Length: 144
Image 1: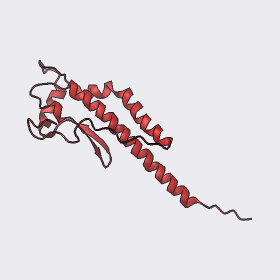
Image 2: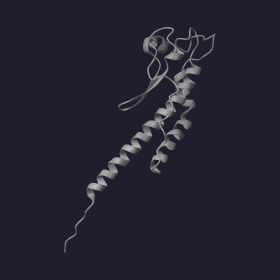
Image 3: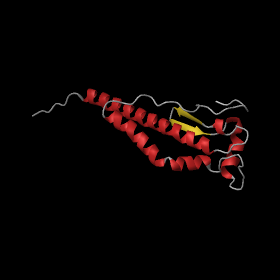
Image 4: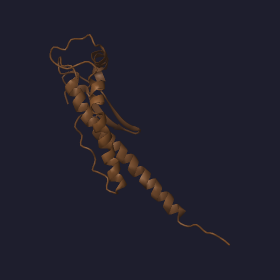
């Protein structure tokens, strides 16, 4: 008695295609959630000379999504974020990025899940809308 299994090549191709679809859905969801987190973080960032807030960015990378503040303002950003003793008379707060991530935790999970669920149903959502720059500003006054 002989058992012959056929169609394994097609099964492998289907599995690989679905893996890529789910990975893209996860990345798109993460990017979309990152946009909302960054808008919140920028609103929480200290205001002095309109230098810090515009340095917030969200970018797709080869391995995922990167977001942060910085560019030419990197050293300034770290101090403003970490030093709880600083006064912010024009608005904003310390830990602005961390607090935005925490405040958006549930929304982030739901956004990512929405993209993955859509992909599981065979209908991936359109690419997420870009709301903030993909690179930090590099010069004072170069608001994006």
